[in-house]
Length: 169
Image (cartoon, rainbow, N blue to C red; front, top):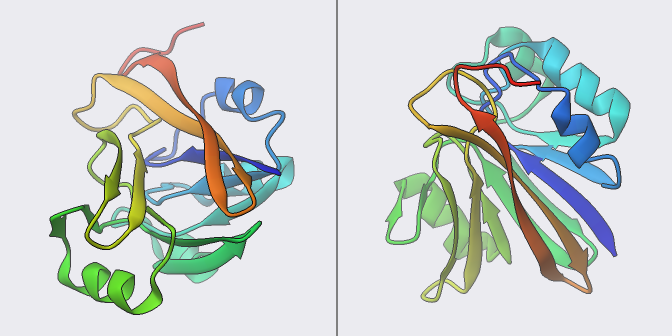
């Protein structure tokens, strides 16, 4: 079993609470809009780290992290990108990748809206962890935590870090 911490849209802000919530995780995945390479570096020093760049990321972040990631963890095939849409509303290139690669789990960020839903047509689970940073229109900063066991995501938890725009202690 592998424990995963999933976040997105930090926009250069990394709440210290992330480290507490992800302390038992084996890997941390970031679905783009990292903002500052130091955010990624801190997460990569803490745990095994996988990330994609987002539309606000500069050339430094883009030189380290790809636009798309396709990988497998404990029998679960994962596709992650920043801008991709969700079931019945995919960006064209993402839908093509989902059809061709047939991942079990598709992850994106960008919308700042936490969403977990199954696409029954393409037989893929979609996760968007919402946004954990303070920039954007989201009201509550969110992230996800889950386990992967024998190719199946289990024990999904939604974690709220507080309101956007206010640093809480």
